[in-house]
Image 1: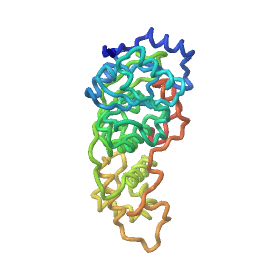
Image 2 (image 1 turned 135 degrees about the vertical axis):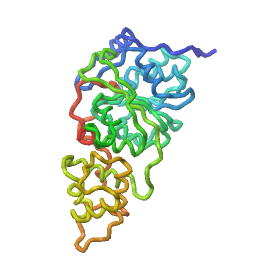
Image 3 (image 1 turned 120 degrees about the horizontal axis):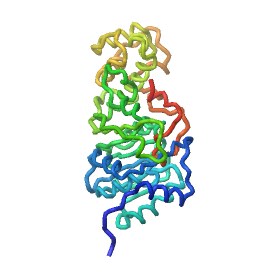
Image 4 (image 1 turned 60 degrees about the vertical axis):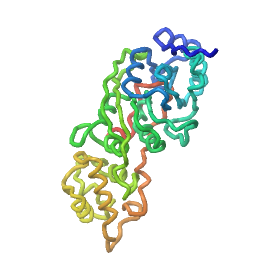
Length: 337
């Protein structure tokens, strides 16, 4: 008869024993910081709002602390892990600590930043301790890749959590805030102390919860809107009339598009929400052709999109399995404006 008892969660002793068995020494270079507090992973699962039977996508399961808590909540888990050592060990950990739930976990050896498919049934929730130096590109990539994702909760560096959940006009509002709003309603869901990790990181952590919403428009593409967002924040202190002139084909055309969208040409990007960025993008695509056309690679066209609008990452990928709040390389341009 199969063992259907509740999974046992990992604590400080179990985490250190697993690390010793693997001869794993957490390093700052990899940003390896493992959650050692069972109450913290229970809290993450509770705040995520996952329901029994849901398929949950987890990024960077590491030694399995959060994975076991998700199994304890009755979920199936698809875990994306970039570290071959940790990916290979996770099934053994599940067999040891949750023997009746081994068939509820799929481990995918891949980089979440570049993955193009996810095996198994479509996941409905994303619950993860994201790699901190690529957290925003990973989140945006997965939201674009997997429309089946309906809701979720991620743990990221505290400053990034503030940016993701920021509203127009606030000091922390920027590219991550505006792009995340295309996909979902985002909110701050709490803070996480440093002492729940081993080793303790040198940065604070925060929880971000989100709920999928319908795209704000189908008249222009996401890539076109993201190109406008990128341009608006590329020179944060300059007014929109100036920063959008390359996309529009000139400052006067940029002003005309802004006025058609009902936006003050002297406003700055930090004051606009996703609906205003959409309105500007639509107005830009509907501008009449200029007598002397702008460079085709710079202007937004109604039939094309700007490739640079997609989230990019200039930093080296970190080991997603680490969970990762430690000292990390500089944030990619999309995250820190």
